[in-house]
Amino acid sequence: IDEAQELGPAVLCELRLLCSACFDSRQLIAVVLAGDGRLTEKLRRDELQPLGSRIRTRLALERASRDQLSACLDHLLASAGNAALMTPELKHTLCEHALGNYRVMTNLGAELLSAGAQRKLPKLDEKLYLDLFNQTRPSTGARRAARAR
Image (tube, rainbow, N blue to C red; front, top):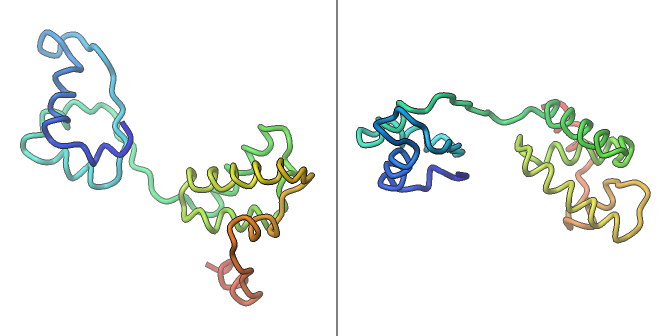
């Protein structure tokens, strides 16, 4: 369940009941809850502690660093069979604009790929990014400052 922090306490309590039979001796379904920090806080409430105590594994993800995003992008491009599809400048721009979020980066990349395919471009570059997202190119000083962060 994505955005599970938006579920009401009653729904979360029902999930706990749906997951098991015979007083927890037999698991019927497995549920994966995905949400932001509000979900963790919600599960600390008194009425949700029975559910919170049944969660076996918790994985708290923080914002990905630019290097982590870049490594992921390189892996995705190589796995897709064209590691050189994007210029280094475009990769840098994608990683900067993703704000530490893998999903944002891949969604931006998918839009670029679609536009590049429509235009029959052999390589995707910053110009395509700027055309597609109607952004003005940052000054050289702004790019240097961004790289220094």
